[in-house]
Amino acid sequence: MDKNEVDLVNLQVGQVRPSDRIGVPLPHGQEDHGMLKPDVVDRIREWAGQGVPTKQIARRLGIARNSVRRYLAGARVGFQDRPAARRLDEDTQREVERLFGSVAEGNTVVVQQELAAQGIEIELRTLQRAVAPLRQEARARALATVRFETAPGQQMQIDFGQKVVAIAGEPVTVHLMTVVLGYSRRLFCRAFLAERQDDWLEGIDAACRHFGGLTEQILCDNASPLVTSHDPATGVVAWHPGFAAFCKDRGITPRACRPRRARTKGKVERGVGYVKHNALAGRSFAAFAALQRHLAKWIVEVADRRIHGTTNEQPIVRFDRDERQALRPLPARPLASRTRRLDRRVSADCFVDIDSIRYSVPHRHVREHVQVVVGLDRVEVWLRGACIAGHVRSFEPGAWVRDPAHFAGLYRPEATAPTTRATPPGPDPTARPLSAYTAIVEGGRP
Image (cartoon, rainbow, N blue to C red; front, side, top):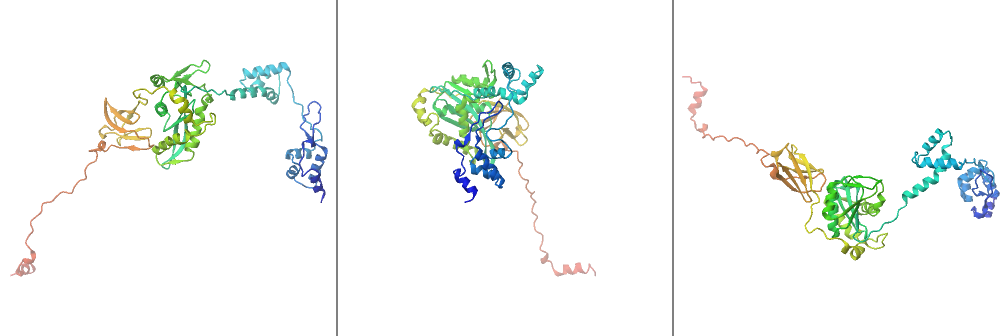
């Protein structure tokens, strides 16, 4: 057994126990980092002299590679010299904290500039150490969240998420409207091709019909189709008139999250991610309608039946037991949720374009300005107070919806060849007498 093997046995296969580390009281300006014992440092230098790589030495001794390098570079045994860090006096520390929380708005460089204007020169790194506790406190205050639970039937949270999905072999950006009941965590989701106000309202209305009732509140973010302004200081929210009317018709109180604090509606934020990564993941679909059918099935068979991480219950069980009877009834008569009216000009090929879907219009109205009314299930084209075209609403991106009657008379029939009058057959030349041919050959000579 060579010397190296003896050393490994003595060190119990190269592992340094906590007792092998010593703490040395250091003079002011030096930091105690639990330095290695002298015999361990001797082995580091001995093996390095034998050509053993630093990585292998560190592995044998069970210490960091940087520790090996530090002692090979000349660090003394027992303590490590470090430059003394400058510490601010109490008055300067208070001034730094005042500037950091006021004029600097958390920017240490600005604190340094303001102190320099007062004739106080301090290194930037010193200031960064001085304000580190303030940064940590602000970070903790921003991240700390108190979970807010709602009573059955009190609140639903709504939000949109986006995901690129392969539909009919083409990548399509799908906008996922997600609704979560605050108490039971029951979830609803529907796919759209945009995030316009009508898409929001249609999604909320479909969710209410899916749940079988209305909640007291709707919690949303500050999306422009819903909120026109939100003062963070006073908390005053100016709602979009269309969304406000929708909520008023159904007796629902809208509430908006604080600006730039999406965790206020954390239930639906997590729900959007759940839909994107579980319901869709990397799946592809033959058509947009197939995607909608998949989501409708997934909601019932997967989302409703999972064990929720917070409630430790299946959402459908919690809903049936506590929340179903707490929801307010739906309106006796269905209320309109999508009443979008769009101005369009009929193209030369007799179509109008709505949400990347083209609908035909009678050809005699080419180049005319029309109004298109987009409903839940139908799309109508109006001109001067009259409906000139109506179609079943399509949801397939890039689809062409045609009515053959709109093109009647547009195509000219193919021209037919002119007919010629039949002439009666002449006499059969073979029936002539031979004397007639003799006369022609001889040229009529006597």
